Image 1 (cartoon, rainbow, N blue to C red):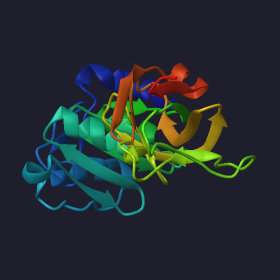
Image 2: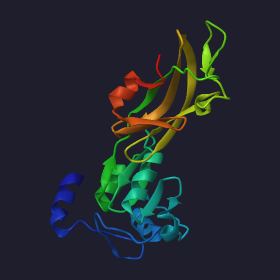
Image 3: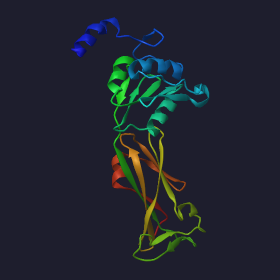
Image 4: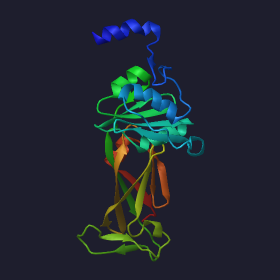
Length: 240
């Protein structure tokens, strides 16, 4: 019965009323968090914060509606993509995204918010672990450190070499298409003749956000796909 009533009103532009009596228009843009909060209040039925007023300085502003929602308003598309990527959805908090706003809705309210404010419900991304192998074969001295055979770290790169960015607890970085930057660490160093194979893992990478840029130390590689990162990306330095 509820769906039938909504359908009858659709031709009349399905408007709700804010606490101030003004209509809530679907798929509207908002100039401030306070404006968005008044619209969201018609759904979550608690007062929302007014934000910091620094959206022009930071590119966005946010506040909360009690424990029922987090709301954000953006001044540009790039910041909106970045913030959404760095705050992925989960089973307890689902994103409803509008033209220049996002509502992280808790308690299963995403459908009500979408019905009243418009926007799109953003499903939680599938997270995966990226695997990277860096094969280092260097004729330079000092170059490869041969450590204890049969251990997790049979070899590494000498901190005194020209490749010192690969020495010690070196890091691997993945940058997604939406410019989310994720970092992982070295998990093993295996000797294969005179080659040291350094293996890295980067956890919790959002799927379907390719191409992915890969960096180990300060050395970059061509962008890769999700399948390539899942299987393992092989990089090489030096030659036999």
